[in-house]
Structures are given as structure tokens and as C-alpha cells.
Length: 423
Ligand code: GAL
Image 1 (cartoon, rainbow, N blue to C red):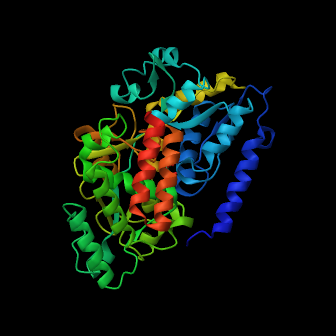
Image 2: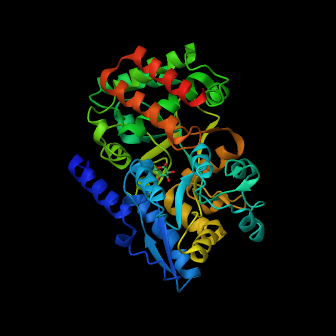
């Protein structure tokens, strides 16, 4: 059930057209009941998550009219550019999805976000979200967005039947990347041609960040973003070698597949594994699969004890045409009820600290435990670690390596990207 490229390209083009012209979304600045919300949760399991949130919003605000300004493409791969055009044209949606961390700082520095500190105070939110998360939403003492969830990006999703058929115990996570590669080899020998499912450039970046965490450790990886770890270090070279080896076990059509199509290869039994953020949980739930039965998960080998963090958050745009309704939207997102409905459907865990773990399915319980106990690092592919410009440069170097497998040029591309971003 892979999506042909032409369909993806068509959806992208349509999304860009819609996003470029707010009248097409139905947004009317004179209608105070409307709220135009911009996300990339346009289809499939992600749309199911958004719908769950909208349902609570409409229950809490019966007169409100929700305007869905989503632009298709996982991880905002098309949405971010479409949003940039709208912001540049002074045509902002009322509120838009932005990752906590460096990516949010881009919008703050560009003066595109309103300060929500008094919203936090009025709604008692500083006590409700973890301090480390609020820090990633704050610049110079002002808080600029409201988190809807926390996702984990260092998770392997495994098809237990495919593994059992190849004589591998699905419940035993390989100790490190080398042990995992032994199993990938075993799967190939057993006739699974492409044991590791992979997708388009941002999913490659996500796999590479997992390998960096495994080879550099949490501190070494975090140092890449502060200048404490050199990009031309031996650890990064090892990571490039490991990453290159992993690519040998992937589907050759990866460049054209979004995450859902890559995850589908595991669901179809044509791959044993997919490294994916835990929005994949929603896809397994919707397929009716049971955790630790048809599928299981573990931390990407070599990253056990680390939580590779990202959070979706919602902003209040400068010049939002429907400011009061947008504030109502932010209230729903931050409410216990809104977070529960959304996260049950999305596969993520609530950002709120008053979460009752037992209310969540098995996978999310593992994520709640891990977030509470493990070392938290910032995801590269999902805006937490690096600015949009820097991660764009890294992404290009990764995409190029996927095509030419030239390790030396990959390393110099990464070093150049870091020099440009960090000076
Ligand atoms: C992430 C986002 C998630 C999920 C994923 C795939 O960047 O934070 O909520 O949507 O992309 O599209």
C-alpha cells in the first residue's frame, strides 16, 4: 500500500496552493467564531489525532468554527515552507504547529509569535508542564507556545512474526548497533530482502540521529548542538559507517516514501523493523495490532536509557485574525481533557505532568516511564536540536549520502553545515 510519488506530489501541490491563499481555507477575518489552525496532520493516523483534539475543542466551544489549514507531508516537510510563505506575506494562520526547541526560536527571533506568558499565568500552566519543556518554549523570560504532546523518536517498531520466522527473539533488543546488524544479516539470509523499512529524507535524518546517539552517547550527541562535540570527530565517522551499513538493509525506493508508507512495509510483513517516532503507534493501533503480540518496540539499539525528545506545540501568531478563538484553541490543547483525547489517538504522551499512566495503552506506558527516568536529548529531525536552516543543510547532506554513499563528502557536508550554523 505504498503511495505513488505522483499522489504525494499532487497532495503537496494542492496543500501549497491552499496554504498560499487563506481565502481558500475559508478563513474570514470578520467572523470572530472562526479559528484557522495550521498543522501537517493532514491524513491517516495523524489526522485521526487532530480530529480527536478538534472534537474536544468543539465540545468546549460550541459556537466555534474550526478551519483546518493543514499541509500534507510528514514532519512538516512541506508545511514549514508553506507556512514561511504565509508568514512572509503577512497572512498568518491564527495558530500553527511548531516544534519545541530550536525551531520555535526561529519564529520567535523573526518576531512572528506573541508572548503567551500571561496566558500561562492565567491558566496555571507553568505548574502543569515539566520545567525542562517550558524552558524549550521560552526566550528571554517570555513563553511562546503551548505543547500538545511529547513524542519519542528513538524507537524501533518490530514485526514479531517476521523475526520469529527468521529465528530471532523479537522480545530481546539487540545490545548495540553491531548486534542489530548481525540480526539484519540473519533476516536477509532468511529471505527478508529489505529487513529495515526506510522513507524519505527526514526519516533518513531521524535514523541518522538515532545512530549518532548510539555512537556518541547522550552527552556526546547533545554536544553536537552546543559546539562541545566536534563534527569531525571519530564518533561521527563511526556513526557514518554504521549508518551506511544500515542503508544496505533498507528498501531501495526509500527516497519516495513518507513515514506512513515506510511503516506500512512492516505492517505488510515485508520488513522486520522501522525506526520511527511514536506517531507510528497510532498506525499499529489502527491496524488493530496488539503490543507484544503482533508488534513490539524497543529503544533503537545503543540508545537504551535515552529519550530522544520532541514536542508539538501551538503558537499565537502576531497579527492572528481571530485572536480570542485562537486562545480558546490553546486552552483546549493545554487542558487535561484535550491532552488525553489527543494523545490517546496520536501515540504520544501528554506534556502535562498530571498524566495517569494507567489510562494509556502499553506502548505509551513505556514512553511515560522512559521520559520520567531516562536522559532526555533533543531530536534533530523534529526541530528540537537545530534551527530550520541548520537542519535543512544536514538533511541535504544526508539525502546526498543516500544517493552516492560517499562517506568523506557526507562528513565534510556535516562539518560545513555546523560551521555555517555555529560560526
Ligand atoms: C513530527 C511531529 C509529529 C508527527 C511526525 C510525522 O515532526 O512532531 O507530531 O506528525 O512529525 O509527521
